[in-house]
Length: 191
Image 1 (cartoon, rainbow, N blue to C red):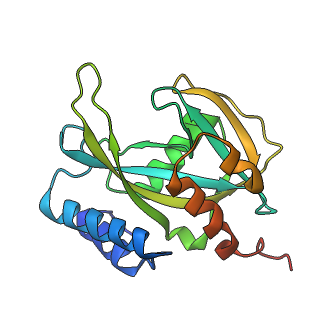
Image 2: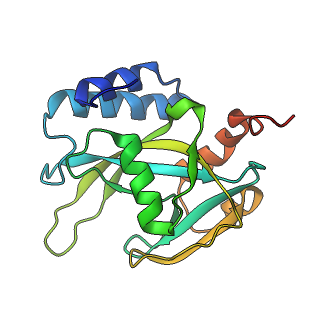
């Protein structure tokens, strides 16, 4: 889809997305309900929750994913963050990868279509009430040998073999993306 991204274009993208399992299907329905109900769904000021964009970054072999040890949540997660008013959630995911890892040469997979959808609770903090992140995730490919830069939002950042991700302190949605990685197929131009 080209042109200016809006709440309607995100709704259309979500409608086209094919969930991996029943849980993800419930997440898609939950996100659709949220964005339909809130014109300010991309704004952090929407205190009940907001749309976020993140990236499942894999290497060319599809055997490794880039994970960050989130400083506030204490979990190993994919890079991602707030839209801050930007309805182009893929652009948000690309920005977050650059900010959180230093990677600027990445390639969207699946033609830039949504890879995964999740809605998860964020606990209350000092000046922020508990709320929900309605996370739209895109699959990206990057060179595993490219230098990484850890941001202030992370305790650590590294490429993790997919068969080792379950050993980390992560969540079920990350493990779902590990399983979904096989759906990405081989790198274009390779068998």
